[in-house]
Image (cartoon, rainbow, N blue to C red):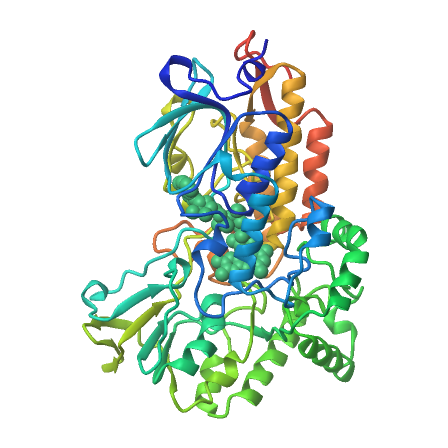
Length: 556
Ligand SMILES: Cc1cc2nc3c(=O)[nH]c(=O)nc-3n(C[C@H](O)[C@H](O)[C@H](O)COP(=O)(O)OP(=O)(O)OC[C@H]3O[C@@H](n4cnc5c(N)ncnc54)[C@H](O)[C@@H]3O)c2cc1C
């Protein structure tokens, strides 16, 4: 009998609770992972440090928070009943609605009984003799498990900036990624927002309507496209639903980013000026992330990219009345799309309001935060409240917070000190039976993440079932397969414009973090095919062993 077969169902061997699988995190990844593993009849325990399910949508409650992939696509596809019955109210659902959806999924699929909330996983240690993991949680409880799945999220470790004097600030300080649960009303207050990434771009127009004065401290100007958000009519929903099988299939199998849209088979320089402008105008009017799909070479060819970047810079200059402010808001140090492109509702127009000031902290970095002001460029900007829209330690931040020790006591943090190393973004050599969902080395944050999450969860589920059918109980990435994959990920990235930006894709927003392009840019369709081929070849590049013949390679 294999070890896995012997423990389907929670047990208390040797005093410690034992599970087949421990899943860390109860966002969209952790919830779907639980659902699929239950389908195999396995015993699963999900630990979630937050007070409820939903992950990103549990934590990010700042004003204006909403998805930037359209809701009809930013939603699970694994259950046709679910996608047919759920009504999205807007083109881009607001955070409360996405959180409601996450809760609906938890209830509809009876997931809650296996999810332990308010429980952080602090440590996971691999026991080579027993071929199992010991997982220790914040309460000091330790359980054992055959498999660990890290569904800890790519954007879940909020980055607190290290600014002199921040701790001594007298007013309230909020981080967009850790927003309070009760509504915050800034009416009559002088508010400072530090950062101008996606969360700031979403929240600034709303905070500006409440605040007596809003000061935005900008280090890097970002490209943003109008969202053109609107209510979804029943008819629009119905037309999506009717075409769902084909839309979902195309998003998975034919796109780079997991978002179904038409991509013309032509590059930006194939058109003359007038035709190109007309195409950009049409996508600008339509709004949304698919602006970047107007041509097929914007991420690859700098001259092509410049035409799109110039178009957006011109639009900013048209919208923002004060020429100096407009100039500051025009991104000029990275190709469009090489940092996560934002979508907004009236972000640039907000700078025409008399109660809004833009402060350039690239030329004059913040010197200090005083009890009631932010000091930069020798000037003090008085504020009653501060909003830190300073983003996340992306992709590796939440994994790094867990003390993970694999073979020979090696820690994952030590192994990844020069940058994350994985095979397919799914496993790291030396850490058997430890899977990562949307890990570095997979398309993850470059895609509609629900598409990538479902693909990883399905692959992991199939893999565990495959092992069970063959009485295998240990799986590990081979070092050479991992090295080759890391090289491939870098090689593909170098063929694009992405590494030209100091982005969080590169770890550039975290002082001291190695600057390596973390996600796999080959696209979700190609990546899916690679993962499927690996599985079809008996999980090529992985070593598998069985309990009766420890260490003996029985499949690779
Ligand atoms: C504001 C915002 C908007 C976004 N909009 C989009 C969008 O429109 N489209 C898109 O594709 N993506 C978007 N994303 C990315 C988003 O993170 C993913 O789409 C998706 O929600 C990720 O799900 P997940 O389950 O992988 O991770 P998360 O939702 O981040 O969930 C991970 C969970 O793991 C928990 N966790 C982490 N470490 C531990 C630990 N040690 N112990 C216990 N629990 C732990 C966290 O508390 C968290 O709840 C957005 C992100 C943000 C921040």
